[in-house]
Amino acid sequence: MSCNLSKAAFLQTFRKLSCVHSQLLLLRGVHVSQFKPPVVPTDIDPFPLFMEEGVQTILNDITGIDLKKTALLQPKKLPLKPVLRAVPDKELKRLQADSFKKERSKIEQRPPFMRARKEISCELARNPEIAPVMTNNLLFIDTSAFTRSERANKDKVVVVRDTEGTLRTATQEERDRAIQIAFPVRGRTIFPSSFFKPENLHNALQRCRYSYVLDKVCVQYDPDHPEFLRITKEIYDYILERREFDALRGTRHFGSMAFYLSLCHREYELVLDMLERKLIVDVMDYIRLHRKIHSQEGSKGSLSKPLGYDKKNFEKLMGLYMKRITGNRKKQAEKMVESLLEAGLPEIIKENLSQRELIDSYLKLETNVY
Image (cartoon, rainbow, N blue to C red; front, side):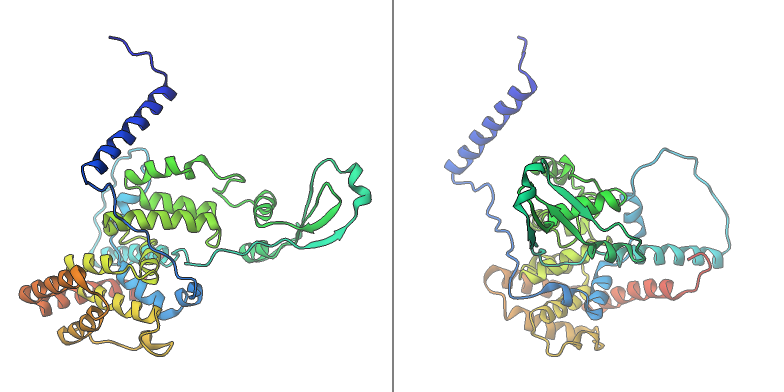
């Protein structure tokens, strides 16, 4: 039996079958998804808080550095013959320190979490007498020389003369196109790629290409662009629903995701993931960060104060944190803490601190190539 269905007909039939399958599951009492996406609070301006030195330090610490994972995330190139070189221990340590410093510099370039930009459109003049000769809108942009590309481009004057004869400031979308034409950013297109369409984006997320998609979003949009916020939120929610936080750990996007989850009061899943992986020091820092974001830890500079990483402080922080969670979440967290106490909490904390000290020693080591 032959099948002559076209590609469009096949996709349409597949969607119908998918819908029927979902309806059957619902009729049987099986919920396809009970996930509720986080809601970003509107009463907090996240950008000043995100850029605080203490917050950035915690985000760097809980992100960590994993050179093996970052090597796997690099784009694949043509296979080359491996180059083997024998070096003394001192030279090897210097090369390792150089790799750690380069990776930390990439992590520190994490995209900031900001509010969506406001639309701007101000009428400057109205000249209806020239409307008959206006066949298209005319866009004018200041192309004078500049020294600070990113900030200077943001401040460029862009105005539009409409076909009705009205002279006005350009909208945000018009500004983006004009600035990209006059001062092109490498890798950015004037019109967004079809890659960011929901169906293509969902396909990439199903293949767990989270870091790759987030990198492309950072190139195409500015952090305050509504599309940037929409796409990154969709990716973070997708990771949260599946609890695949480790896919971003060690990359520059992990800190932004952790900040977003804490801002939306959805940090519990990440805290539990850290407890399961026995990252006790990260749990303590993340709880402090959460308390800081929601003004539960006093003064503005409280995060910069040193905190002892020991069993006593861990139990104190977890006790304060468990007061705000109830039900199965609290039982799950208590069970996880009990298992860590039985496994030897002081030894686990000591191992966590040794990993951080190793990273700090490499970052403080002087190198000639970095």
